[in-house]
Amino acid sequence: MKIKIKDISGGINSVPGYKALGVRAGLKKANKPDLAMIICEKPVVTAGIFTRNRVCAAPVKVAKTKINRGFKRLVLINSGNANACTGDNGIIAVKRIEKYTSKKFNIKEGEIISCSTGIIGQQLPVEKIFAGVDKLAEKLAKGDYSDAAKAIMTTDTFEKEVALEVRVGSLTSFRVAGFAKGAGMIAPNMATMLAFIVTDCSLKRATLRNIMRECAERTFNRITVDGDMSTNDTVLCLASTTDKESIGNENKIIFAFKSAISVCMERLARMIVADGEGATKLIEVEVVNAKTENDAKKIASKIANSNLFKTAVYGESPNWGRIIAAAGAAGVKIDDDKIDIAFGNIKTVRKGIAVQGTTQKLRSYLKEKIIKITVNINKGSYSCKFLTCDMTPEYVKINAEYS
Image 1 (tube, helix red, strand yellow):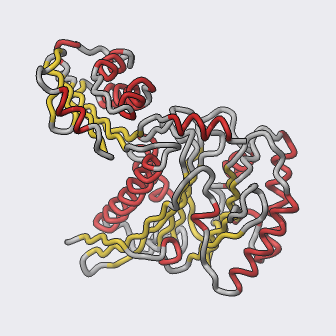
Image 2 (tube, rainbow, N blue to C red; image 1 turned 90 degrees about the horizontal axis):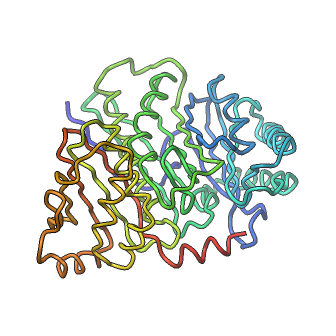
């Protein structure tokens, strides 16, 4: 049975049963869209993953209480204001907005999920959101399904969208699509990131949740821009039809969906890192032959989050010492005299000692836009890959001025 996955255009709007659009509600200083909506023709099953930061935003707190209860029909996302550290007023604001939205679209309050991203500590301007919801209703009525991915951006420089069509032999076909935002405060265990994925593949809630968590662990939870964890991170996945799996439990179809959502998440994650604040290079850090998978993950994460390493890549400096030092600080038992390091195909360190005559090759390689670092622990058979980016003066400038 052949499984074919191909790219299609249209983003979330390419998936039957879903519409996504955005408008300007006036939450940002710039004259740009800042309120997005995903609306479903019928109630859908939904799975969600949220920030592990112990300080989480009001919309995250509300969403956690209802994500596993009943079906959902609408996701409302604002940028420009995180609605985090806003006390009881933040929770009240979310509930007021969801009540207003439910009446506007004739949808139950329990079928709405709210998400926010932006500046922490400011009260959410509810009246502006109300006006934005009115604009969304008008735009939806006109059949104008644009600007959703743009409306959730903060310091992002481009929209991040993926749409896939999946064919499973003669059994069935379905689509998977999503959009995301990132830019800064990106770290493992969910960081300043919002991602929304929809599909018209019919799945049970438990199946959707399990697949989503597994795929997110190997994609969204293995990226980092600056190592900081946000208060608002949310990944939502919506699957059409009902909680009954009309396609049955055929392993091939479940496998096809898992493959497609993995591709979707991996591409969105890659875009998020490539668009890290001030980034000029995408870096792949792969640790191989570690004793355990957890060891590999710890080492890869430590290297990917090393500011010394990231600034060296920006400066195109082949300072492999920063890599091996980070590996040694990961809290994992390793033998430095067994470690090999390669920059791309250039073998740089063998058994913990520098390979001579590679400096000029390395300097030339580091001018590339995609840098691949492989660290061989030579102690087992487990591996892990992290995506990160270089750290630049522009990153400092963006975050010094962000308010």
